[in-house]
Image (tube, rainbow, N blue to C red):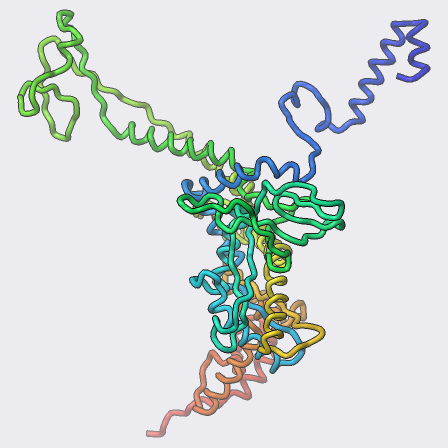
Length: 510
């Protein structure tokens, strides 16, 4: 209320009241509906806490409940499996790009040899570790990768003396949360310098949830150069990752309870229940309990079997229970599954496996958005926080061990992601051929999109051509002999290649 409003209200309270009411109405019109306090927003609790403050208290509970949903619900395990299968598949391959083909082959051979035995626990290869790390990110929100330099004598000759140990986020000492000095701060087990950059991690050597083991009293400080910390970062300044099921956790739990209730109801509907109603007032509660031995013919019948004939005592009659069935649950469950799939970032058919109402257009449209989500995770999270730092460390250790020559510019790398399986292979292949012909993408990009290394592919094609030419074999799968019926081929090109094709064999004269 300004000076004029107070002046008018002093001399004319009625006019002042109308002005105040009009001003309140005007303020409400100018405000956002979501920021208005009223009956509809009475139970809406919100705050402006930073990302780390919002995560700090609830993260252990969210992690434990997310793991419980993955263990004990079919949809939790399904989301967990589907996303990892698309993001990692059977493996992610590095493609060195130094500009020297011979050196690139040497780097790939050295990495392949190291990838076979890089697991600190000695069980998985590199691809298996990446898949396991992705599983942990989806389920627990984040993963830690401890890079351990080992003695060259403990590995095979020619193998980089470096191993990777994956750790669950529980290993981070969240209780180590304090301001150490004016230039260093520790927040949820992560140590930062005065610029906000990570310099170390405070890690429990033993999992805090391990039972029966002697737990250390103090966490261990690990330099940031020796630790990989990978998680999906959704807010500026966010230092820890949140389980991906957090937005749908409560709805998913309610859905699991509803499914259990539907199953129990269906089991009851499939049974025939019966009650014995006695019309004899002389019988007491003590008479209802039979004390006869098991083999006695007078033992009371309490269960029913198919084809059974039971005789009732005088004054007793049989009443059956006829439960009513309901078909409304399917619509409710389908609606909940749709919301659950959308909140978890997968499609409905991927969550449920239900393809009854799916067609090429719907599957194609749904997969396009899902693939964008997967690609965003692959390149903006997995590559940036896990694969690239690991590659840089591996190259440095390989140069120190004399396995790779020292290069001031290092060893640039590109990561080849797993192929996206097409909905209709023929249509997608034709589209890819036209894209390469029109210059929208190059042939190496086309090959890499299918999860293959273009250089390796060319080497195999060259060897195959040389082999079949040396043997004098002609196959219609030879792309050098394009068929006229091949869709997407230029007409003049097809005619030229047909004219240059080997002559057909002529029949022998009789």
